[in-house]
Figure (cartoon, one colour):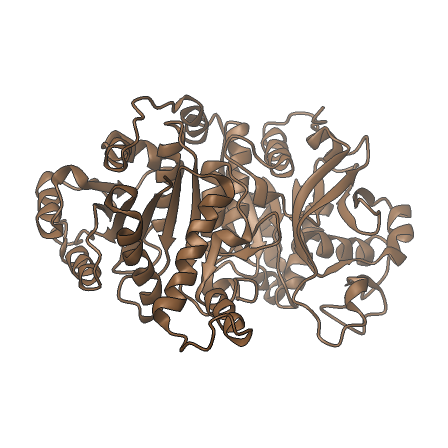
Length: 542
């Protein structure tokens, strides 16, 4: 039978449930088991697609075009899985489905209620996710914190699953903060105790408690957690701060968590093989080189807005045995004080991420211009490609006031325009090109040499693209269009071959990047930053 592991959190959000869930999946994987993961998000949005990144971090995109919480990115990066939109379950999606069934008469006139109709829908989604991939174990992370009113239907659903699936097939893990007081350096367990009590109040007794703390908890703290959590001491673990998040499975498994989980669920998995994972981690924490990257964006106040991109830069660094230090710079800074762009001289590379709307765009364009004119290694993603095209049109092609119609609908030179399929729509979609699409690469280009393939598959999320009416003039002035969609209607990559490294992609390579298999574009960028810093010749990547 499929087993189910439920991960809940207490005290405050962002305590590390996503990393813990991913790490547990890795512990099962190295023992030969097949896990999959489901994220239960209590917010009423149907998906994360319409959310401002400052609200919930980045929107992660799946192969099938699902727009999900950023934790699905962590699951994919740790477990090298390609999850689907159905691996993300929100309150909005659940209620939408139940209401549609009610409108269609599927409930035969019954009074539709939270219990059983909403909870049944939640349980069905969890079970279907495991069945779809024939998983040995389904890991379910319940978003938010215990005690949140919007999370109660999800907690009730997982409480019912213990009765339906059996004790031997279900496991509850609770993660809570154990703060350390600055004055006394004392570890305080009261917040954890209160969240466990709240969990019990709704009928769930945790089988495992994971203390989240800056340092490894001491014996006295562990014993106190076990006593007040009503669990054995060997069921208490600590996720303490480490240099790299990819070390978390190693430190928890060393404490015995992997063996405990397998024994508790009846898996006979005496052997584990961390050799490949350990080699990836070693490359991350034992670098030979170091580079400084300027990430110039509009959401720099919350680094989770760029978590997949930041991790992809680090993946590229691990492949090059290079430590990647990222400085997040608010693009508007260069608008308010244009001379401040000269601080980019202190960096080894300039990275322009995704974005939407007009805020900060001129600051990003200023940074791109600096990179091009000063031959700094440059990588742009999605909006980064569009703004790089605008900068080139203005300052090289002499198309003054060139712009995107997203930013200035009346621009005389709309070098970036809305996707043609959107133009005649009365109500514009938030985006139309989303999910995985085929891309053709031009030979003898940077991006072709990076991928070593003529055809690749990458994920997308955008609704504005390079206007094909301007390709001729841009090409004549030296801009190379090295990647196109399978139909050749969409520009997917641009580059400047006369620069040390200058590349931008419309697609999002970061969504498929892994620690041991980094996105070629990100890896090439970091390699170029490292090589230029140590005065190596321009890389050819062949």
